[in-house]
Image (cartoon, rainbow, N blue to C red; front, side):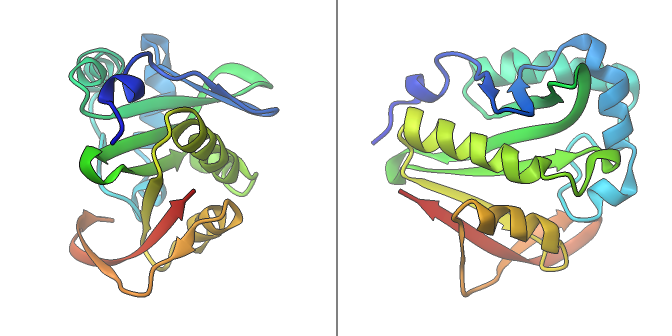
Length: 187
């Protein structure tokens, strides 16, 4: 069993050769608004932060990096490219931690202007390295709408295995219920 203090001891800073993941700051609000106002981004995922006002997004940035992390709810971090280190291009998400079975769920959302550049694949790789190798969580899950083939590919490139049975998701892509493909990574 993993101790939550290991996962929530310090807000993660993860880095690869082209990008890094860290706590968001208030100056990210405009870039976060670009992501949250884009229907193409939210077509395949739950509407977390969707179309919020800038004041609500500022509060969310403060809470995600503060209260929500301190209360050990989840980790939602910003994704930035080394080529433009002050521009938030996406979110890396770690949530639904199940301590008894040593499992966590990951997600990611990327500004549409940065799609098809391998960013999702790199985010998943960083999350696996952090969660599996550093924090020692043995099972990592992810869920994808079947039509989101690029997200599925990013998971498969990183060693996730597609589950045989579909899972029902609520309020994904603005729909009441949808079928989701489950993916599992285990070390």
